View (cartoon, rainbow over the protein chains, first blue to last red):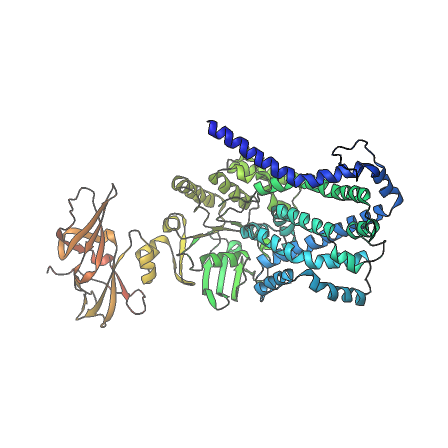
Length: 277
Length: 361
């Protein structure tokens, strides 16, 4: 009895230590963002701010192109997600359900492109964008992100689709549905948990992407948050820590909202499988 | 009383997956309103045949027609068929009512009429209380009835059933068998029923199509298939316990086997033959032949007896429950000559050969 209580305490202690280690940078980010500039580099440092200020937030929102970057990031990530998930859902369904020559080879080739380091694709992609005349635009980033998010999305959804019994689709066809209707009425609702996790994956990937955004785009009109904030606040001589932290907090908010909203769907979706035979 | 609108015809239908042939040159005509079982071991092509009829697979060659119309190019939904799957294939995200209404919805039946027809089917199948449930909240038997309801609601020409009872427990299975027979008698539509269970095929069907290795072996009533098996495969597959098959030869007007010598009723040319004996056609205790009891299995209403014959063959017989039989004992036996089956050993085909009583050895 005594032993198990001690064990419980030890376990909790360990768990909380891990949580603390993981969460500390986030807490520090929030705290730093509301500290006045003069308090930042005080020695010894203060943990709780003596004075809370939102001046960094107002400066970011009203005196910098932060909102433009934010809009760019939102448009970019949403467009990429819609494109990737749309193509990957249909593609995965095709790879799972239809028999055609070269199907397996195709699936493996797709995975192979995923294994290539993204740096390798950077220059070819840039040159292609220039040829296509879309360089330096949000659209070029959508295409670039799609090119590296699609393979993984395809494989993720493929494994989800493989779990959906073929009989369900056959039943819908016999019941009078066309292929498309069967797909939308029966397959899509079953694949929803997979589609939602693919959405999350793609959105986060696009939201956090830095390298392609840095190389393919160099105007403020098309810069997403990652590169925008960096070029705005980090220079060779100075790092605007307060603004950087405030920007980081605001960058995290959309992801936190999306997670909070979709987590419910994710857990609910995993519980509702097909009928066991 | 067959209705030509409900007739199903396979005309030289062949189906190959790459180099593997799943169904070879199938010629089969199922009369309108008939209950036909496609029976065979797994991999015999019966499910592929059914899926081709449903439009879920395309025949490599040949023509499939329903009600006199060739349907090779017709989409599954436009064939006026309904199908019950082994897995039931209920749509998990829809309620029972939505599941049953789905085929009506896809055919543009109005909401009000959908509701009435779903209600009617639910009453027939005693599903009334379950209409707002999701499939996963139902027992296996209830799911089975919902799948049946989804097929019934549309009143199609042909019902396709793919091993619909194999996921139910034994008691429920015999209950559902009776319900299916009753249902077929009432609605008089064509039923095509795929099964590997000969009991289901024998009890429910008007006719049975026995398949093996992608080829149709025999198409006949349960009595025909049982009493006059067309070849060695059917002889061995139908009947439980299985028919005893003795490999011997025709010589000097008689069938010769180390344990059995039996004269033919009419002259037979010399050659290798197989003699088939059903367990119930063996009489133990008297007769011209001799065997040693290996194993006795009492089932309550009878005893299944395995006997060793000279030449290493084995014989299965049925005996009345009160007969005293001990393993290791040697006893005499006979078989009713008019009930025996003779096959050509090389082609496996049934021969029209009659046997007569053997003289006591």
